Length: 377
Image (cartoon, rainbow, N blue to C red):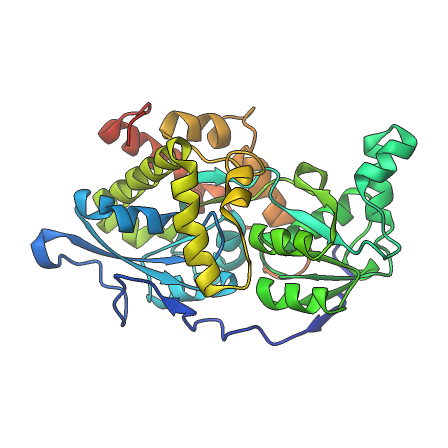
């Protein structure tokens, strides 16, 4: 990809990068303060984005599980592309993001680290196309040819000269750029319209672009509007891995709080495994109050542990993310992040995982404190 100029239409994001979208219940304003508050609870400001997966901490807040773990958690809802600026500025202590977010800023902000992952986005990414357009789905092409790999190649090659709406310099943009690179194409072969996911979806539905790639709520809304899934999941690229992104300083100074937060996240996942409908009701109610996603509880239940996976305990996180044969081995995704961001000129140098991917050591500390095989909630 080096040496090619990316063609993209710059559209103003829905909000400035560091502006909060909405303050959730229990959230206080001002800078992050991870000191000790009332009742001896450790204050923790956490940035989450309005998607059905990254909103999971709401469950822990409503159930009182963070308080049980000794944490006074302030949840702050941020646009996806505003989470890393908020972390860097000190407005929050932790954000729910992925490795792409870390690699995108680590050269400029070397204190930023990926602490722990619990949510491989295995089948979550989907390139949406128009039913009346001249692009075809991989399933239709596979049915005609009987060869899925050939069908995948044909779908990607058919994007040449087309306009794709997505959020560049995030895992969303990376997915489609990786797909292009896998068949010998690059960004210069398409035109990108770079927008925040919700704004991009609205533009796509009203006629902008030939294809769109956003998050799962946007995918659900696009399907409701009659759009089709052209490619999804591993047919695009190595899956993103959602989890806790923070700073090395925070990990060094507040390791117990970090481990407690992770423990509640695993507890939330076990609850959602056992009580998926109730979990989905809470998440979709809040999500639909704050976005135009229109995600239903039935949709949440269909998606849960299906198009993306969630680790209910440390053992599962190890099998999914840390193991070389895992469904979403972290090093494959990390290397893909570097290839995309460095190759496109978004970062000046590749980011070494030894300095910025702390999950192996944090996993060990977590297991030493809580064990690997919790089953109750």
